[in-house]
Image (cartoon, rainbow, N blue to C red; front, side, top):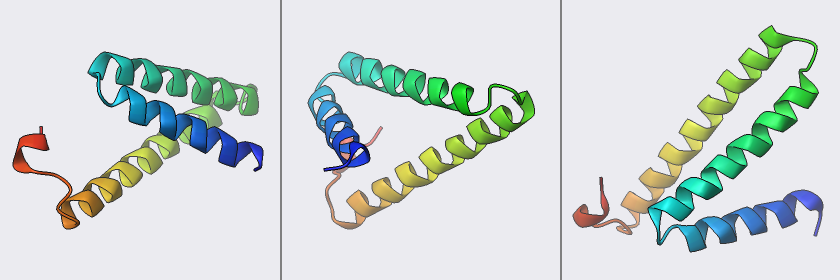
Length: 85
């Protein structure tokens, strides 16, 4: 497995475990945000405008992926009305 695949497996397993407790889930999400932020700072350390654009683009990617997953789960009937917020 390459690094990206290993990281994906680690993150997904941690999210699955944390999903049982909202506090744990928030900790995992905060950690991911911190790592992504650090990577973006390294990449765009000399250009604040490009850093801002990259962060905005990342927000869009995250939102799109979350909506797509939610729609997929709903289409499969994996979410009951009680599961929705």
